[in-house]
Image (cartoon, rainbow, N blue to C red; front, top):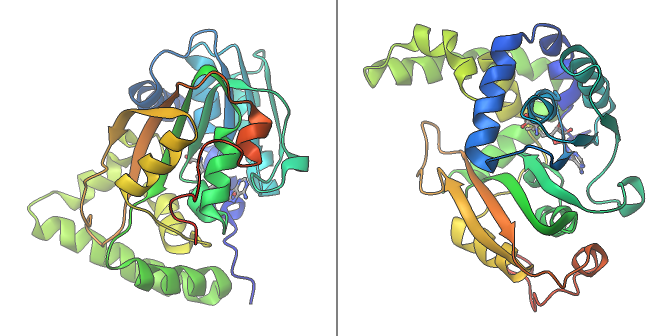
Length: 285
Ligand SMILES: C[S@@+](CC[C@H](N)C(=O)[O-])C[C@H]1O[C@@H](n2cnc3c(N)ncnc32)[C@H](O)[C@@H]1O
C-alpha cells in the first residue's frame, strides 16, 4: 500500500488555469503573513503549485529558490514561474526537507513552508531542518495542522484516500456535500463560498479538498508545543493566525506562524544537526 499522497498529480491541471486574480490573492496572503519581501531571498520548501513562489517575486523578492519532494509539483512550479515571472531570478528543483543532500546550501532571508512539514512523516525533524535555512535576522513562515480530538480519525481517512485511488471520487463527493451543507446550515451561502474560494490563498476549492482528504503522511501539534520548539531553535514568535481556531468545520485546520530569528550565533549546520539549545525537543519522544 503506497500511502504517500501524490500532491503533484492534483495540481498539474490546476496551475494551467492560474490567472492574475489567483496571483494577486496569493500576494495578499503572503504579505499578510510575512510582511515586506522587497529585496529578500526567499526559499519555498514544498512549493506545491508554485503560486506563492510567484507571489514572492511579484512582491519584490530578489530571488526565489523553490523545491518540492514531488516531481509533479516541481514541473508545475516551473510552469507557473515561467508564466508569471519569466525574467525574474528563480530556480526550482526536487528536494526533500528530510534529506540534507537534496537541499540547497546557504541561508535565506525568508523561509516559507506552508502546509508542508506535517506531511513529511517526521514533522519535528522537518521543522528543525527548514529553520536551519533562515539567515540572520530572517523570517520563518510556516503553517502546521493543529491537534484536535479528530486527528486520529483524519489520519486513517487520509491514509486510505492516498492508498486507494478508486476511493477518491466517492469520498470526495461525500465530503463536498457534507461540507457545503454544514456551511449552508450555519447560514452561509455555500455556492458563493465556492465561487469566492480563491480569495483564500489564491487556491481552488476542489483542489484543496483533495489535499485535505489525501494529505498523508499527517501529523499535528498544539500552538504551545510548536512555539516552544521553534523558540528553542533561536526564534521569537511573530505573527500568528488561526492558532486558536478550535475544531474548524470538520475537526481539522492549520495554524500559521511567522517566526523571527533572534539568535545570530546559530548556523544552519548547528540547527540542522540539532546542536541548538533545544535539549529534549518538544514533540519528540
Ligand atoms: C499541502 S501541500 C502545500 C503546498 C504549498 N506550500 C502551498 O502552500 O500551497 C504540501 C506540499 O509539501 C510537499 N512535500 C511533502 N513532503 C515533502 C518533503 N519531505 N520535502 C519537500 N516537500 C514535501 C508536497 O509534495 C506538497 O507539494
